[in-house]
Image 1 (cartoon, rainbow, N blue to C red):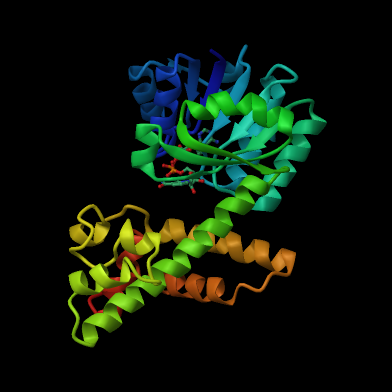
Image 2 (tube, rainbow, N blue to C red; image 1 turned 30 degrees about the vertical axis):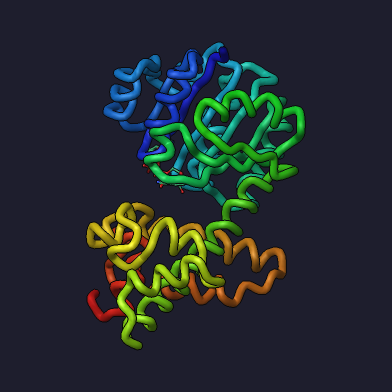
Length: 296
Ligand code: NAD
């Protein structure tokens, strides 16, 4: 059992924080939203009134924040975690942020006498609630071994991806592949339909042929074949266009810095950018299907 400060109790953080409580950790919860803190307290965490209050006496800080600027601000800004936490403790940031921001955070943490792990997640709010997230962690072996039992309280599959920032690298490479494969799956279903096949018939064939992929068999963008997919509820997310676009921007920036050719990744980015500019940020990312059909 550890003493943990959890910072960032939004769509993802709320369930993750509650699962740490269920795993018998002593958790102090903080968010800028007082309502989010109150909701965490109802689920067994201690309501903290500030970052300083949350990190008082804890062994571990876990954060789930929107973007890199929030992570750097919360940990290393004025009145932030590093200013108030006990030296030597472990920081686990689970947010999806730029690889460069994650590496900057690691450097700052080590300079200030702390250990840090970047541990972004795969899986949405349902997995966060159920404690079945996949974590991909970057940092030293020692820090990873300290983080692993904490992450196990919130997830099912936990991976050490290597050095600082490698968790974020795994996350954006995975999500770039997801964006590309979703668009490809939408195009295949649309083409099949235009050529005279109904969605279920094409699914039956392709899901056991070489076109099979997660976007098809777990999240089918055509209504019908996979009852749980957002296509069956008019593309309500799920995983929204805005979130996919965020991850594709991160992938494009990282690829530019690393000199990696991601021409399909860039094309996927432009397709989601176009949806976003037309006001469809809140549509599920499989809603590309609706656009191909001319229904947007
Ligand atoms: P969210 O916006 O719902 O939650 C973020 C929370 O952080 C909010 O409650 C906000 O008040 C809080 N916050 C912001 N700045 C703060 C500060 N300075 N101090 C304290 N609290 C602060 O976002 P989310 O959907 O929970 O996503 C969090 C992260 O997880 C993002 O990086 C996102 O990319 C990633 N992610 C989300 C999903 C998903 O399905 N929602 C899936 C995988 C990864």
